[in-house]
Image (cartoon, rainbow, N blue to C red; front, side, top):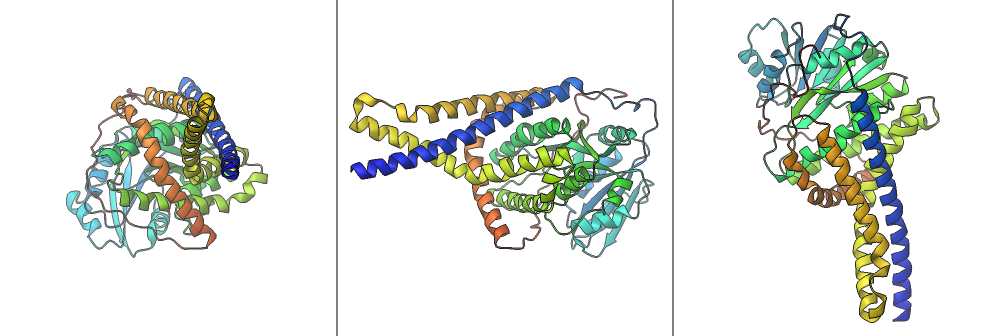
Length: 433
């Protein structure tokens, strides 16, 4: 029995230190991101010269494959833009459901709308096809299931009066908050993805301009070679290439896009597996940036992705095992040595409590920085984090094993439900902003 307790004690000690290191890094990251996000909010203002200079011309490119069920809503939100000269270019990528025909029937002969059907070439191919056929200074990429607010295109366009800016990430939100899973995803977008983009914009280290809504300077995009076919995260890959080339990538709070999130666990895992696998591919392509002059990418973007988007989910199950093991060890000690109490579990419990408190405070800051958000989502944070950790651990393990084995992944088209709630305007927007 003594040998068993000794082995268990050594194992518990190792796991305990892993737990402390993981939680310490996570807390430090949360604090840094929160401080940077608050700084971004305090210093946010219209780009210098935006009020005096004419805005650049803008075309929104909407790649679509079998999107007949949702494409009408996306196009309607674009044509309602308050940018009067906004043009819309829909690319039907060989759909079998007559996506192009649906758009043409809804908006026949619209002067600012172009609809083209091409042979199926994948999302990157469809985007590159349209990119070479438009002549605007700025292109906005929008997913076909996504609705934007009327001022979104204008607020994205104003950043390009700064010649250093090559891309602007919009404010993507979950628009179909119809069940617990989609509400958890809405919470994640607010407290993780968008809060991180706010913070990383201060360091020129945004890891992805989202495909749901993102704007690009067309000349910079062409110089980078457009969208590539060799990853499943073409948006992350392009963003990292832009950072490595020395371009400025920033964030626009008021360009809101409501996108359709997976409504079932199976669809959710399918989407996140593609995101994780594609992120690994994009990160591997930029591994040399750790030694390059692209400081934002090498010092912040890649370490953040590797440590907290890949390694942390990968070790999530281990951290949970540490917590359970520590409690079990404390109970055994208490049973055999009643006078010893729960001391062995004390540090783990304290570190866990510290993380929960900091995580909740960071989430509250994220909500405070999002005008008009639904604060009723915030109490879902703790169960969301606990359940998400298990799912993301599974996704990370699967993606890493697949990458090490040299597996190939398909895109994995998600079924649409057309349940996105349309939006009219962003609460922060004021005339002329």
